[in-house]
Image 1 (cartoon, rainbow over the protein chains, first blue to last red):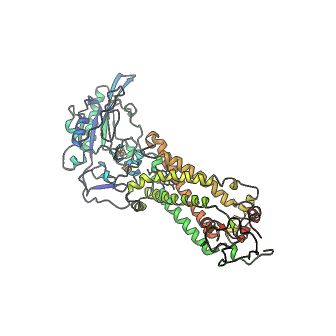
Image 2: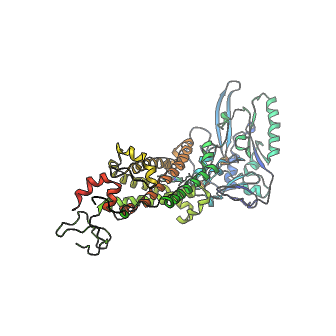
Image 3: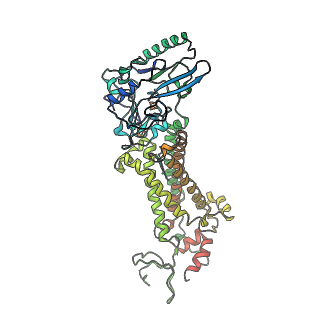
Length: 290
Length: 239
Ligand code: HEM
Ligand code: SF4
Ligand code: SF4
């Protein structure tokens, strides 16, 4: 939920244009995994700003707490221990949460008009008052991000603090990060910082270091610097894109084909009737032996 | 006999016993005394319960499929309520449909004569003579019966896979994606089937009455289902 209403680039399940007179430059959050110490200050800041308190759950033997994203935990630090051939044992910490795709699968899949919007600054936001709780956004998302309220059944995820950004503030997680693993600004600036960081990392022997800004979803408004390069190590898809099944299911082609099918049935029936008319044995002259 | 006012197709001989399954209601006055019973009250009520459930399902499904039809969801009160209702009605349809279909399967087994009927189907649709039908159902009706069984099973299974919050969370995302696509495809194939089904019932006059009042005229039975007529109807009534 957010304050903007005049700078909506895309709106779920809507055939006409959303109000978009106001244009903003595209923003992005940069998550530099090589600087993250896993302190979870960003998780706490997210709870604080969004006024969310998750249940105290169980542990699964990792540092993940909670174990996974939930309707009330919109960002979760995931911890992995990886034995790398060239680097030995590595402790990888991934800040999980919505990537704010330029081409969001959640928005494509959503059947409820205006339950998901994308602002001109690139932030993808759920509008829970329009949400019907069908679960399609999870089906559509290539990163398995949306989660549903246990009691209200509505979909929730990171808003990139659209309410803060809308009034010129940086997201709460950025403000609180003690190591500058997180930065926020225009997408252009964030890519520049990320690329500068790659040069730095490569000098220090991380030759596979890479920026994660998957082009399969048109780029994202949350960008990672991955010191070991391979996204799979961080449990992120190597080739992220909207599943072709979702693409087909929600395509204009499928929708038009559906409508044409319905229209054809009615039209075919109409003209068949006009051509042949009814079969009515009771109206036939009696046959022999009747 | 309470049929002084009836449109008499054939006069009933004096002293003959009344037709076996004669109308029990005095006001069912249009039923000729020699009508042939085609569907029992139980079969008719189940059929129309399925039809109502299907209508609700298709309308609510359509609202979820295409934004142009989202307004339909407000007929249910709120879109959220419609979304919650849809799968429950789906399960109800499944139960009712199979209760209905279980009584009909034997009559719908294909027989050798069906091949000829299918070959002459398009000619029949264009006003030519219908090939002789041996069973209670013609080959077209049988094909409809079996395809509807496949469609309902398919919709039920795929619908259950994407049923949030009860089942979907336990289904892997790929499974849900496949199920969602198949659910839509089957929903539209079923729409075509139901469309043909309704049109055929209207086109062949007298058929709709078989499902609303239960009976068909003797000539209807002889014309459309002579084999069935010979086996069932002749034994059943005085003539
Ligand atoms: C048999 C007739 C049925 C028809 C014609 C039908 C039709 C549809 C259609 C057209 C959609 C929207 C498609 C989309 O955009 O994904 C849909 C969604 C859905 N259907 Fe069905 N369906 C039927 C039966 C069922 C059954 C038996 C179930 C299962 C229990 C079911 C569960 C669902 C669910 C869960 C959705 C997703 C939206 C929601 O959560 O309500 N459907 N259905
Ligand atoms: S990461 Fe998922 S939830 Fe976030 S914008 Fe992309 S598709 Fe939507
Ligand atoms: S759960 Fe809500 S936000 Fe997600 S697709 Fe359904 S209506 Fe849209």
